[in-house]
Image 1: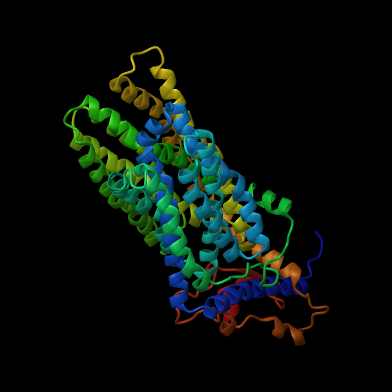
Image 2: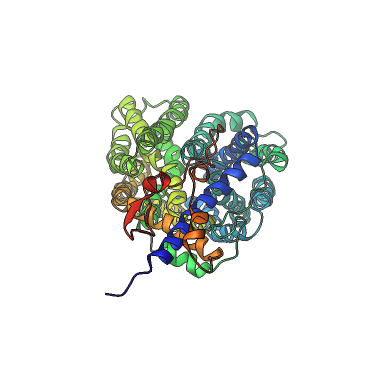
Length: 539
C-alpha cells in the first residue's frame, strides 16, 4: 500500500474548503452590492415582462377561431402558427445561453425583448391577407422570449439565495398562469370592442397591442435591472470555459437529464392544451346547448389563474417547506406524484363537457393545478444541480429540448391528428370536437410519463448535488495558488476559522448561509485520521 502524505493531503483539503467559502462569500458580496429593494424590483419587472410574453403566447389560442376564419385555414395550418413561434425559441435559446455566458445578460434580455416587441406589433398589422408572411413574422417573435426565459432565471440564481430562490422562481414562472388567464379574460373582450376600428379586425388589435404593453414594461428594466456579472468558482467574474466540457458535465448529470425530460413532457401537454382549449370549447358549445361560450371562457380564465397558481405557488411552497427542513428531494417527489394524475384529470375534463359543464370545469381546474406543478420546480432543480457558470447554457439547452420535443410541435401534432380523424367523416362540430378529444389522448399519456421522470429525479438528486459541490470546489482550487511547502509553522495559516465560515451570514435575508451545510471530511496532520468540519472548527 503506498504511503500517504497526510500533511500534503491536509493542505489540499483545507484549500478546497477555503475555496468553497470564497465562492459563498463572493456571492454574498455580490448580493450586498445591490439593495434588497433593487433585487425585488428586478424580480417584479422581469416577472411582468414574462406575464406579457405568455399573454402573447396564450392570446393566439384564444382568438384562434377568428384567425382560422380570417385566413380560411385548417387545424394543421392553425397549429403551424404556434409551431413556428416555438421553433424560433428553439433556435434562439442555445444562442441566448452562450451570449449570457460570455456577455451581459441584462442587455441580452433587453435587446431580445425589443426584437420581440417589434415582431409582435408588426406581424398582425402588416401581414394583410398573406398567411405565409404572418407566420414568418410570428416566428421572429420567439427570439425575444427565449432570451428572457433563458437568462432571467440565472440572474435570479445570483441575486437570491437557496432559501428564497424557489419563491422568486415561482413568482416569475407564475407569469405563465397569469398571462394565460388574462388572455382568456381580456382577449374576447378587447377583440369584441375594437372590432372594425380603423378597418382592423378585433384579433389584430389584441395581438398587436401586447407588444406595446411589453415595450412599456421594458423601459424601467433598462434602469433598474442590474448588470450582474456571471459567477465562476475560479475567480468571481464570468470565465470563457470549454462549452464541450460544460455539455459533458450537464449530460452526465442524471438529475438534469430527468428534469429536462419531465419538463418536456409537461410542456407538450400544457402547450397543446392552452392552444386548443378555446377551439375545443367553441366546437362543444355548438354540440351542447347548455354551454354558454362567453360565460365558460370567463370561468376558465379564473380557473387558470387560481388553480394554476395553486399548482405552481401552492405546491411549490409546500415542497420548499420540506426542502428547507432537509428533504432535498421534496420538489421532484411532489411534482412527480401530482403530475402522474394530470392525464386522468385532462381526460375527465374533455369527456365530461357534453354531459356536465360543472364537472368538466372541475376536472379542468385539477388539470391546470397538476400540469402547473412543474413550472418553478424544474428551474430550481436546474439551478441547483449545475455549477454557476453552466447555468445559462444549461437553461438554454433545457429550453431548446423542452420546446423542440415539447410544445414546439405539440399544437401541430394535435392539429394533424384531429384532421386525420375527421377526414372521411361529416364536417360537423361534433366530429371536430371528437377529433380533438381523440388527438389529446397522446398528450394525456405523455404528461403521465413526465411525472414518472420527476420521480426519477428524486432518486438521483442527492448524489448529483454532492457532485456539483465537488466540482465547484475542485475548479476553484485548480484556479488558486497552492502553497509551495507545508510545515507545522504555516499550517495554521490554512485553517478556516469560524469567522470565515460565517462571513456569508448576514442580517440581509437574501444573503445566503453556507452553500453546503453537510459535514466536510479532512485529514488531521498530526494524527492522519479523518474528522469532520465541525470538529475542525473547535480546534
